Amino acid sequence: MSVLAEFSIAPLGCGESVSEYVARATKIVQSSGLGHELHAMGTIIEADTFEQAMAVIGQCYQAVAADCNRVSVTIKIDARKGRVGGLAGKVARVKERLGR
Image (cartoon, rainbow, N blue to C red; front, side, top):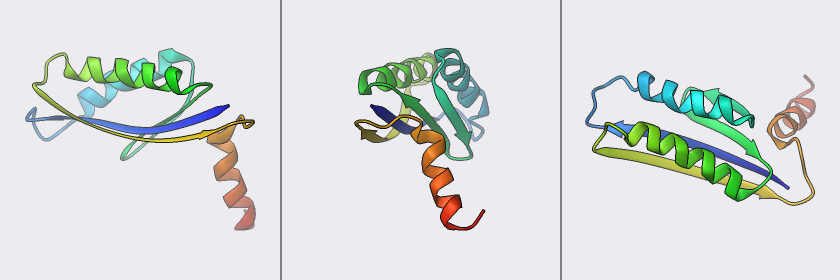
């Protein structure tokens, strides 16, 4: 199974810049060993199970919430049985259709 989880975590009331908090979460994602992509509005991880993806997102939440009174979390999940490599494969198939 391939579980793609796109998520963003943002502290509220902790100033305008959130890069310090994004860096905290990114370190956790990197150390998880999961495939991942950081983009301007969030992060996508690829896990083998829903529980594995949620565990990493939960750790990221805890790291951000450690010194923030309010945290906003948005999560989008795409789980597909019988598929692996969804993180790169989905983008590659679209690029193929575009002739790239």
